Length: 261
Image 1 (cartoon, one colour):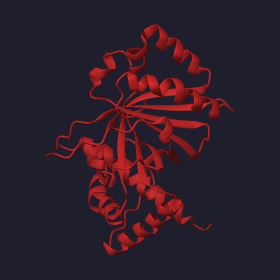
Image 2 (cartoon, rainbow, N blue to C red):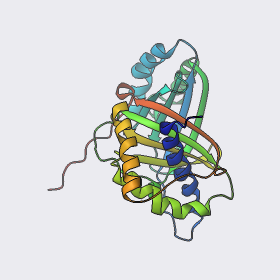
Image 3 (spheres, rainbow, N blue to C red):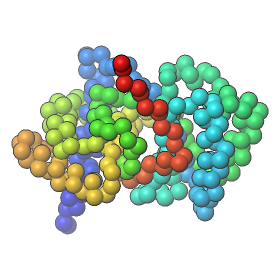
Image 4 (cartoon, rainbow, N blue to C red):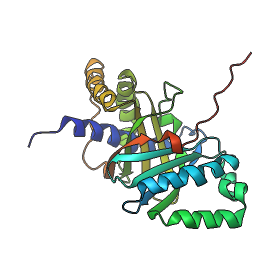
């Protein structure tokens, strides 16, 4: 059977990224304090996507803004389950989870409960997680512009296969990805609400053409650096790859920081 180079490229990045990320957590070097975020994965009922987006933009988004949310990213899956959306909201700290939600702050608890009940009619499934950012496994975006396209990888790592990949990630994969000129790599680990061995990564691109160019640059960088970041069998217990587009009209961008005088 002829090997699909694109699939091989994606599997290589995902397996090394996620396997190594657990290994970092098990080393003796203290990990940086993570930035927690609320991650919501919703699957809409058939045929309601347009109606839900209008509802969200008209009723939920204004309440989030009024309730003090400064950053909120909504992504629509374009390859995978086409009824699925992913919502990411950074948290100041876990203590924020003790407080009423932004919608409740804006409208009051009774009105917020009614609004959420009204929204739930659109949902076939609705999962909420707390995810811990892993800056040690990420590459800061090269631009402050709104993102456009993301290759999203969800991976569950096989226990006991981590330490051998820590060195591989640090010495093989990360140098290749950086040399290939990736626009950004955001990595997180499920903290609450799911499997703690589940990791999520988002590779940022401007377009599919950009993704294709990165694939070629990745192969070239690996050859120039004489590195072979290949993933052996058995590291990953389960993996899933989606492509998603950023939805600016449903999202909240942080205010640009003013330059220091």
